[in-house]
Structures are given as C-alpha cells and as structure tokens.
Length: 108
Length: 115
Image (cartoon, rainbow over all chains, first blue to last red; front, side, top):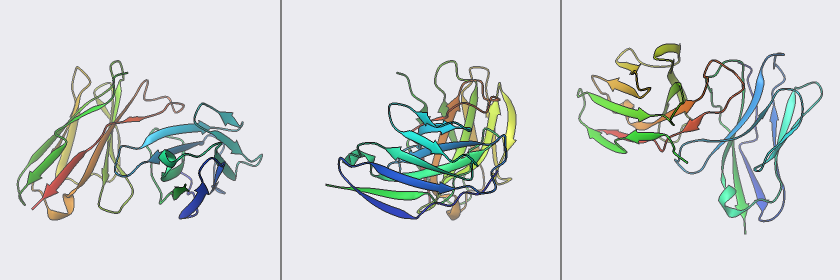
C-alpha cells in the first residue's frame, strides 16, 4: 500500500472550512484514497473515499489531484465536534494501515 | 441503526494470563477486522476474516489467535499476556469484505490492561 504524508497538526476556526492535505506520490492505479477520523480513543469513523474523481457526501468533500499524487479532505463548516485525528489511507486491499494522521483542533 | 458490539469494554489481566475479546458485527456484515492501538499510537491492523475464513494477517503476535463463527461474530484469543499487550482493541465490520470499495464500521473498542 502506498505511503501517505500528512501534517501532524492543524487548527481551524469554528464555522470555517477545514482543508486537510495528504500526499501519496507513490499511489498506484488501483489504490483508493480513504479518509477516517478518530475522536479521542473512540473507534475510527469512516468519512469518505475515492479513486479518481472528486467525491462529496454529507460529511465532507474529497478532492483528488489529476495525477492522484495528493488529495485534500474538506470539512465545509467545522464544528467543535470535528476535533479529531484524521487519517488519510491509500489501499488496494481491505485492510486499513493507519499512518500518523493529522490532529485537527477546531477553535471556538 | 445497529452498530458493532464489542465485549467486554474493559478488561484487566495479569501477566501470563489469557484473554478473549468478542466482536459482534453489524447484522449481515460478512467481514470482521481486528486492530490494536497502543497508548499514544495509531491503530495497527491485526487480522481479518471473510465468511468465516481468515482473509489477511497483519502484525498479530503468534500468541494471539482469532476466528469468525457461523453467526459471523469473532473472537480474539490472547495468551501469555505481556505488559506490552495493554492497548485498545478495535473490531470493525464491513459488507462484502472482498470488495475494495466499501467502508469499515468500527466498534467502541475493548481496553485491555495487563498488570
């Protein structure tokens, strides 16, 4: 599975959009980009995933660059409850290999 | 909606004892995954089962074993416990586990403390 690189931490003002970047320059053609988050020792929570196209659901948007070497998770209106560690995972199997993730802190 | 159930939620054991963690997947989910998260660490994949057969193996110690039963629940058996086994153990389930394009639903975890 391709390695991912994420900034260790980010802050975001409440109500503003949170843009979380992820680099995955060694991604191969059949690998998906998944995003999960973990809120303080709770079970990780699925957010969104994509292969090539941009995706949007009720939680977030996922923007994947045309060369697929990087992606951005967008939380359109961050709330305090979005404070969590966000993991970008690139996989071609079903098993999730978590990296270090980005600790997002939403500030009132 | 029904979620993944794990039991027990908390478990305290002594070194060299054994422990069994149980996971009940979301109804109709056919795939179960086990993850271990040590203090201050990120979750690490241990093992997965699809339709009662082991489908993949990660960093699971030889002292640990797991299985998935006919009702799709799974048990993680841990023997000769060591202090380093103290961690949160998460179970996740998914539907049609051999398909890549699906999401995993995680349980609340079992916190194991080895004294």
